[in-house]
Amino acid sequence: MDERAERAETGERAAEHGGAGGTLDRRAELSEFLRTRRARLKPEDVGLPDFGRHRRVPGLRREELAQLAGVSVAYYTRLEQGNGRNVSAEVLDAIARALRLNDAEHAHLTHLAKPKQHKKKQVARTEQVRGALGQLLDTMDGVPAYITGRRSDILVWNRMAAAVFGDWSELAPQERNWARLVFLRPEYRDLFVDWDQKAYDMVSFLRMDAGCHPDDPRLAALVGELSVKSEDFRRLWATHDVKEKSYGVKRLMHPLVGELALNFESFRLTDGTEQTLITYSAEPGSPSAEALRLLASWGTDATRVGQDSTTPRT
Image (cartoon, rainbow, N blue to C red; front, side, top):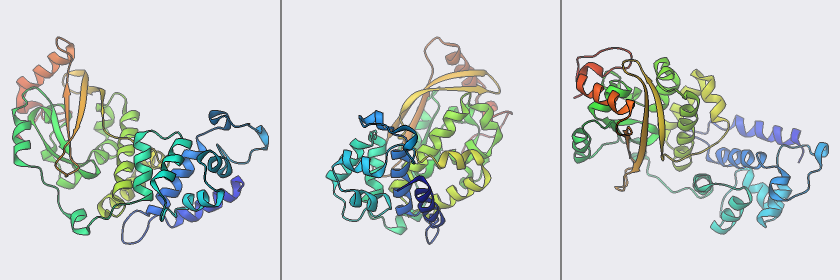
């Protein structure tokens, strides 16, 4: 299939992408994910000859990908058109190897092609955090920490997290969401030194969640709202990149104490809630460690980004 035909097919899929009942179209998600992964590979990347200017599509052709995966062109074409019915784990593994997928991408492909059944009442239910976990956060003096749930909703946090990231208790519950903060609130563009990376991470996390729960109407509504209100979100969402929360260093420009370099760790809870505990710490003896101690000493006077607050979190 040439590039024009693929673009026409992509346009038809995009027109149906909204799905029914306010949910994401799993078939369209599967189709676009495979197409974008194939487009990023060049023939020389996988040991195939490159015909240069005679190629009409970016990346590998479907025929080339099918050859690498050891499946028929017709079979792979059906899969890329969103028909993953009865596809085996072995075939998905072969396609993942051919596409050079990382672990997160491989898991995302499996979620899209072989979705698990979720009860709708579980999707709509408000997430709750076990009381013992909230108590744990409160004992972590000097360590900014919070727990996120589905759709990167911010569920609970401690005093130090409020001092560093802002007093989320001042926001309506539906606004306590990292994607909303990053893309819709200008102060968070100023807070994150590498805002572009933070934005990319947020969209990649949402894509991973969408693969697991394409029937989540709240997630579909969030994606729809952000797509309308943020050009940056639309651009990143179209890449179909996925990522798991992990660890690293986050650099912030705090309005009260200046630049912070904080190590973050993500701990996925094992109680079946799909919640994640995220903690931040500074290198001992560093300027960032001193800045955290300063924020801790100010207490509730440092619970808003960009301004003082005298209202503690309850």
